[in-house]
Length: 353
Image (cartoon, rainbow, N blue to C red; front, side, top):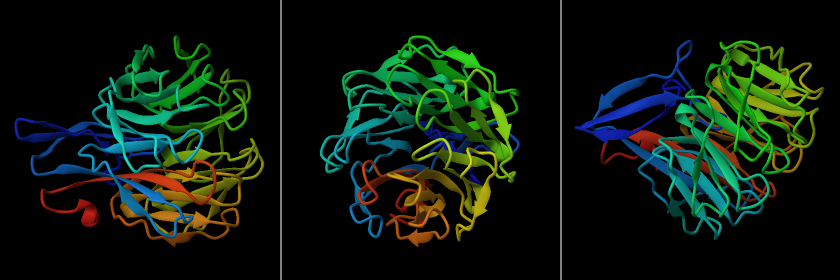
């Protein structure tokens, strides 16, 4: 992002402290540098939106909450009714009525970047800055901080088949694995700490998975994270989100400058698709198969394909705020997205609502 990172908003002594960061479904650090805190004029404020479509993305409506904190990730685990959105300040919102109302929940972390409820609406995890990992087992009424064993930022979490075995990735090439529901996390070595990893996906089991990150890095494991091998992505663009919709063979990754990559052979080779945009893309979602999918990113950009990525059509998103995460929970018709930006008081975010 040329601000290239989600910003931590802390209002104190008439200043806003903004911390740039990156994630699988969210912001990016400045190229060649770690996210660093910078002081921004007090007049800059945060604007966040939750968007919903019920017609496959043709139209999007803005839902409450009109949050004053950045929202980074959204997850509807089993249907289009009950879902969660997380963001800065430990913000966690929950809806049980398809987004008609969103209720704030206690987060217990300074900033949350990604969330996942693996099997149901009861047990879920969220990860964020400074190695934060929180867990709920009661549908978000209570969140417990887990010991990750790292102070490095974590940007993506994935529990592929159940709520027991999961992975988290982040700063410094950090890859963590748990096999006991988050009670303990073991660090795995991808080969170099030079990697920034922004997104992780284990498509069908806890053995074969992919992680993407800075400078076009794509890593793959086939032994449950025991070893991670770099794949040739064919790009040096930062990659922010990866998804293999049905199996370990066909997958997509999106990133800076409208980059969309596709593989059909388990990552052995990647083909650059024509996205039709130069906007940074931060989230990708194929809800049912590898044919119909969505990609979203900077300035309200949402793209849709119905032919496996051969052609991408831009959709009107009803906002020009940056879209950090998009998800279609059960089909390619009903979907949600979270968007955020910074504005001066009295102005709409990034020129849009």
